[in-house]
Image (cartoon, rainbow, N blue to C red; front, side, top):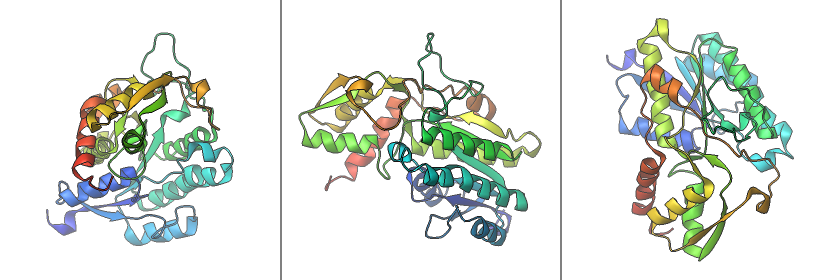
Length: 305
């Protein structure tokens, strides 16, 4: 079980929220005996360059590629569709082609934006079988990326929503900053979903990878949803962040119509995690529990914030 037996995982987009959490898993050494990580971001590998991707993957010969890279500027994508398509769809095709050439497993992370975002009358959590209907450039390009990944029979596609972390820029860090600067904020209360700690998503992805390696004949490749547990709206999410962060900032409920944006926002992003739990036994902590852990980490590292 020494180094020669370890499987290699190439991670793209490793400076983002999810990539940074995968780096943290590597640093913690939990998978040290089984996996060796190769972390890349645009400086090491331009995933939009098919020739570069084939050469890099051909040289590294990994057993897995985890694509944590994406164009995630939802509003900017509306006027930058070409770049969004390049990163969210073309780059996925490049990576899948390279994975296939070396027989590597592939993990693609996707989004709730692939759905039409309409709130169902019975308010059920959306399953993997639900019809898609993206309403934005971002959603359409991510759906194209899903199709590219699922065309390969050794792919996991994991849809997530409302991602945050101690790393990078995200809603939690923005709220903590604004909560320290302002006495009051207006936050939309008519968009529902589930906040997801990127640390939990990274842990779930590694459990899926390990499961597939342990059960090669029943690896479970395909499409899954992963978010934290429960459901809330952005306003209640913001209030909980303020409470946990000790911010004396009142959060006022507003409507989507009062906060216009270039890209349409889903009114309903509650995803069912039943399939991923049943298949891999992954943990799905309640969103409040994970948020408390993240805010605790941010507060303990905070003198300058």
